[in-house]
Length: 578
Image (cartoon, rainbow, N blue to C red; front, side, top):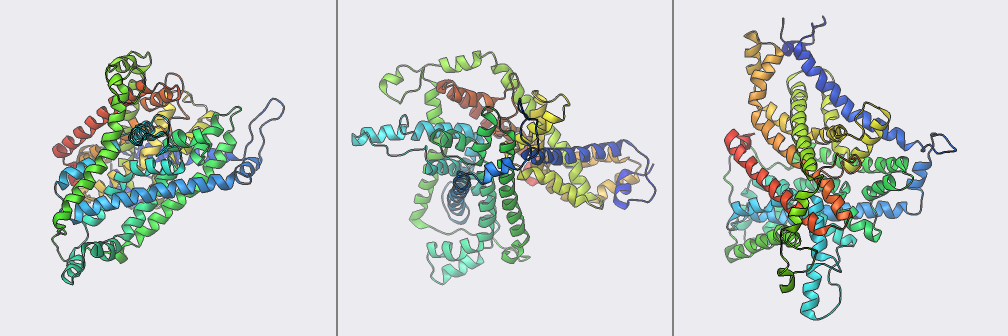
């Protein structure tokens, strides 16, 4: 029996016999096609359908699009969505780029520590970060307002998080670590020769940064901005918690409202979702086009260089202070306000009287909830199951794309990456519509959320596995085949062990983001299938702020411990080398 590797690579005219290898290959391919295309088709179909009523059957119409795009509120909805996404993306980029420049291009002290501190906010789930800033900057209960009012002896509102500026501040600040990581990679690989020549010509540090460094880094900055824009336009937690209470609507919050009003307007939600899909698709397309032209701005060549940092002199203490303030604002204050709230019997501002009421009752209350154990179990099962499934499926797809010459393999790669254009809420809506009509027994069960998680995070698995697959030379598989190993044995005994660092890194990442996931879960959960993020959402809806804070503190600590374990695993299995 010839090996499946050779059959796939050469595609002989005679059809090969079926073996386990073809099953292992065929099942993931079929799953990718189903997961990526079928929900999209059902979503588009539903956008042209009106719901069945007691007097009229369901029928095809353009009414959903007329309501979505020709109503008086459409222009405001579109403008709000773009303003929110663009503002949050720009804020994230400015903050992240400044921190990355200070960390990579200057002699700021304690840079290794600051790098670790700067990425900690990515561990905090979006809903908890938003809730913490409500407690900090709400006009009524916000600690910042209360402190300033007491300081200046006035009732004036100094900061208000329930505004468009507040929404941009919270969302942009939360994802500034993403911009920091993206720009750190650009600054780290940049040849400092031009900066050194400018310094020798008498240019000041601000001039070098503005006229040399940032100009060389602008393609990376623009690409990062597009990524951040796509991420912001699909944000759900901030618009839902900060925008809806004061009537500031964006597409994600409008989709949520359309689904949860009575009667449910699924067709209208699908029409809104089509716009959101177009916006994210355009952003991702523009980013990919920019990446393909990046060679025009290359500064790393075959000539070796030794990265040098700019000596800031006494100003380096200012940059270190900026890092400390950033950590306080983005991590310490949000976590401390949640911790303080979790120790109260009811939410109240810090005071000597409130200090006397400190207790662990909220933690005991959360642990005693009848659904708590089941909720944690659901989250763990979904995280472990989706991470394992995503990495195994994407490993096979990455092998096909990288290793074979199968015609159309680029299409398979694009299909596996297609869920990137699905905002979480839109993906949840598409899967909900799909399995309402395709009755295979998953609707209303944990399985439908598992399908959503696998679909949503499949592109991330592809990125990890494709990068690792490119580092494995094909001759290792050819040697196994010449020794008589079948494709399935070669893949199991040779490829997967060599992919272990990338597999483990991707598995840990997908598991962490699965536990945090809210936007695609909010439309799919049902009684008995709640996960931790849904429990936090319901506690907020019920006004149980101290219980929410207690659960949030426990979740943040658990996720932080997972990140530490991931770093230890990275040192043990060599993840950093992938």
